[in-house]
Length: 287
Image (cartoon, rainbow, N blue to C red; front, top):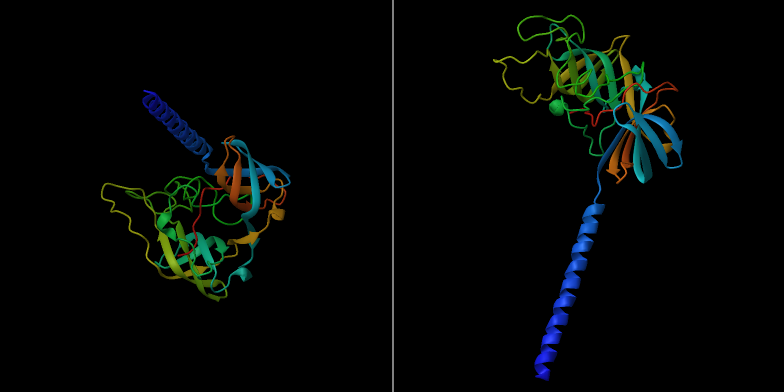
């Protein structure tokens, strides 16, 4: 009888130990799940800077605390002149398509960037129309127009009235003369820039007969520079470039209180002016 009681007691203690063990594991997993972080984005104007944190304000999201670490990468958009364009640069152009050529564009604005270590530019126009395809710009700055979508003013298509009178007719609208090009510079001759890249132009409103839009193909393009063309460039920089009033877009990890620990921060200097709009959630470069 004693041996039977001892065996029963051992089984009971064994069951209790197993229960405690698995209970600890479950609690641990629940704790880890609760601690799991989610992607975080903060976009708007820098209200204040203190050490390795800044307060970012926007009309839509209010104020967000953004922190950075030694591994955070910073980039800055600065105004440039035509002389900054060089063979091998990546560029994105918004402008007016030529009437007698399907591969020529007169530029209104150009954004320059450097290719990756492999020599390639970022994704081309295939992703155009998504949120944040253009970065925000401070008042009077060059580059692409600000807005929530892939086109000036936001949205998935060009707004009515963009870019002049344009052709009018079924499925057309004022502003159908907008062209957007993206690619790598192959030659620079005076006020003409040769580019290997993609081009979208002659936008029209969808109709029942509208065919599915195909991915733009890479081709040889010619970009004409005008006296009114504005240029800007995205460059690598450091946290020390931040200033109150700058437009910023921070991407990273969101904490439980909504603060963001940034892995990347994009800056557009306003020169002491107020940031008029936040950045979109992405961008596109050359093909």
